[in-house]
Length: 46
Image (cartoon, rainbow, N blue to C red; front, side, top):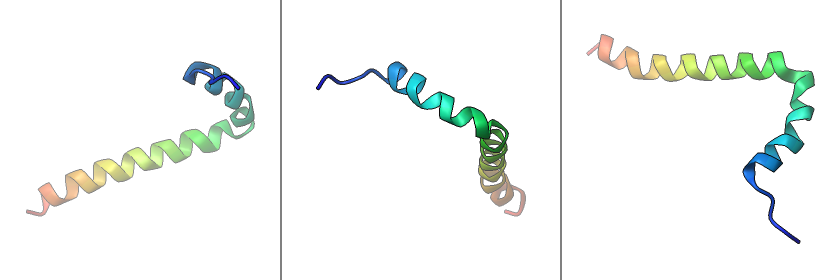
């Protein structure tokens, strides 16, 4: 069994996410906002 490259694996999995694209983008935006808040709030309240 040969190993597939990352690009090949992404091209196989990506069509399954098409149905949930809005949810995926919302989840990534929330994760980014959480990261910014965790880095920014301690600086603001120090």
